[in-house]
Length: 351
Ligand code: SAH
Image 1 (tube, helix red, strand yellow):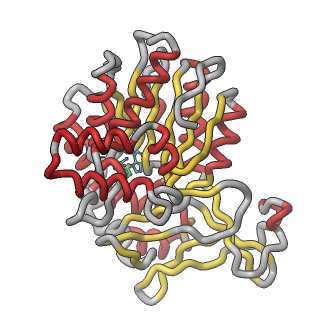
Image 2 (cartoon, protein in one colour):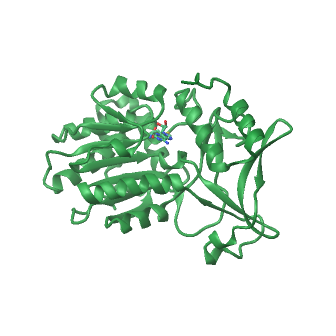
Image 3 (cartoon, rainbow, N blue to C red):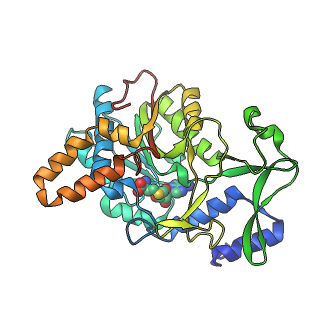
């Protein structure tokens, strides 16, 4: 067996480009994010960014109640599984499962996670969980209750940009010691959806084979096995142009191409793509709706009041967390919730 490649990622990617030419943006993003998540816990005030379950326990609890409500409406199937894609620190799962336990929904836990550092973190909160590299090894029978919060935005994207002579895929080259985006090869106009073909030069269209493949695997399992998926992320709907790729470091925007593997690279999720994949698999699709509306319908107001009553010294902190999760100028509108539900299953709450 060859020894593992221990060269820093930037050096390895530069070597690869020198040997074979520019690499796809998707490959650059996949390698950068795999390295980024494999080598750190990026969450929290001292990290690079903060996610909804890390802001307040209420987020995971309400997600858990949403799952438990659907499970009980579906006749409380005994062989159901909890599945989370990209569970981070395991905080959402811990809060959701605690809320579910209160109504006697205690399914086995399956975590799809590639980062060894985050797996260890998750194991400290969820010692009975089983881990999976991807969706292929999930159990083949029993309804799946899938949660994915800020998972799809971390998956690699492709970009096609309109130049003077048509649309070209964006590749990543290495020039004068820096990674730079470059337009590649012959124009790809035939790949561009008709209504977007005449967008002005400089326009960018994004696609994500990785999102489509994960959503496809998820949807076909739910169609076959029953259950539902709750997807929460920032994103948009419909055919659109726009460069949404961003790098985040220390709670601020950073250069996308500098220091690959040291910043979190994300792109906005196209909910219409996941919706189409869900419908093609025969699932009912609900939403997307704003995260704020979804949490309000599930009773985040009452939950905030109940927690504040039990711990009056935490009232200001609880209200600030609720506002951050729900207000339109914070996470309430940018983040969206969407549900995919198995055929002939009951309609979920709050959509
Ligand atoms: N859901 C968590 C974490 C979001 S960050 C939260 O809301 O706090 C993205 C998560 O997806 C991390 O756990 C990361 O390690 C994981 N991840 C990223 N790419 C992945 C991939 N291709 N397969 C599995 N997990 C992945």
